Amino acid sequence: MAIELKRIVQLRPMAPADLPAAHALSRAQQWPHRAEEWSAFLDLGEGLVAERDGVIVGTTMWWCYGEDYASLGMVIVAREAQGLGIGRQLMEAAIERLSGRTILLNATDEGLRLYKALGFEPFGTILQHQGAPFDIPVAELIPNERVAPMKAGELADIVRIDGEATGLQRGRIIDHLFDQAQGVVLNREGDQAGYALFRRFGRGYAIGPTIAPDIGGAKALISHWLGSNTGMFCRLDVPEDSGLSAWLDEMGLPCVGRVTRMHRGELPAHGKALRAYSLVNQALG
Ligand SMILES: CC(C)(COP(=O)(O)OP(=O)(O)OC[C@H]1O[C@@H](n2cnc3c(N)ncnc32)[C@H](O)[C@@H]1OP(=O)(O)O)[C@@H](O)C(=O)NCCC(=O)NCCS
Image (cartoon, rainbow, N blue to C red):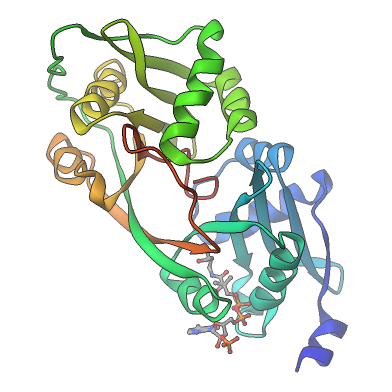
């Protein structure tokens, strides 16, 4: 099977010229990514495409964080080419290139079996919430807490806070997002205690990442963005154990899907004082 497959599918590094074909694959899956998101994915990371008779039938991508970690995503095989081992071949090639690093991913139900077979283990669930809510309660701030616009001069502190919460060096991604996103910072007692970005994504906007010391801080950051963009289509990908799901449901952002967080290698160690309440997106984590 493997030898026969090599003849019909060739893997090669993804190049900018492949992006329209890659985008067509994600659209066929009804995934909401725009050309801009694909282009940012390739600016920030690397990928492989599987070609059959000169036609791209599969993709996978990854993004490295520091020396030890990587996030992997955009694993897609065209429907007509599924079940032939192409997904496995793409994943094996990516794993080889990421040798020595822990790989993190968010698995759809369709991908679970493949990832488990390749040594990935589940460690939680991400819930996809989205909607266009109108009625957003004003955040209840605690004394000496405020939500303020993020300034360019705060970027280094934001990257540090983000690293504390995730255990990942995501400076490059945050820099890139900062160019296109609006950000707010949660200040407590005059110190930066969290942040949340708001930016175009897919059908509307995404709120993420959201980093906060507790659920009250996360709600203050998220309600800032929802309250100042009422009626706009917004999406958040939140960990199931964040405690945010029922609150988002009530506000008119129902849960429309779930994916399984998986890791291959040791999970990043992070501090207990801060955590991620929403992802950048499912691919980047
Ligand atoms: C997940 C996906 C990439 C797998 O690609 P693929 O080329 O079909 O997978 P492969 O043929 O390499 O098969 C991989 C494993 O899944 C199993 N598998 C394949 N199709 C399957 C199906 N329809 N149902 C159950 N298992 C299936 C195979 O048995 C194989 O296991 P094995 O290697 O132990 O025999 C593909 O189904 C896909 O693109 N799905 C839609 C997008 C998606 O959800 N991507 C995952 C994002 S995290």
